[in-house]
Image 1: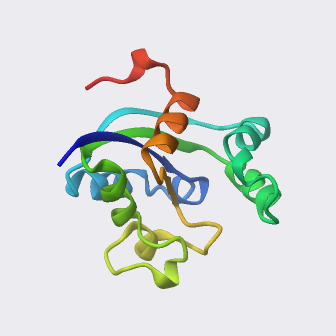
Image 2 (image 1 turned 30 degrees about the vertical axis):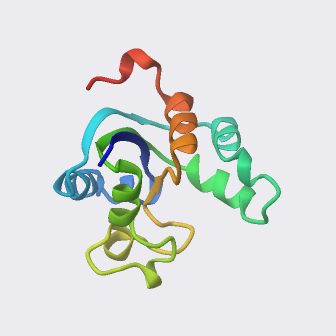
Length: 140
């Protein structure tokens, strides 16, 4: 088992309902450790840059509007197989398909307002971490 880092974001629909602590507790209970965290209110331009990979998709504009509508918590998680573990704890994108006990099953409002985002691969994790954090902010 490899110790790795992944990117995690608590989205505006969850921060607006004061779920930050509950979500972080689920991540920590799963064996993930928060090594960097900050609460920000991303601008529309930042949301467009962060989600640029989805630019050609029909939901891109709505996604960027939602993500810049309120504060988010961006974090770096560390642990054994952190990417896969984080994705398991988050649950399926569609909360109707998410397993019981997952973040999205418990807290998501819809497919679009699904409370959390997490990296899907080591390359994506590295890019997403670097987008929001300087190396000096990552405390092991």
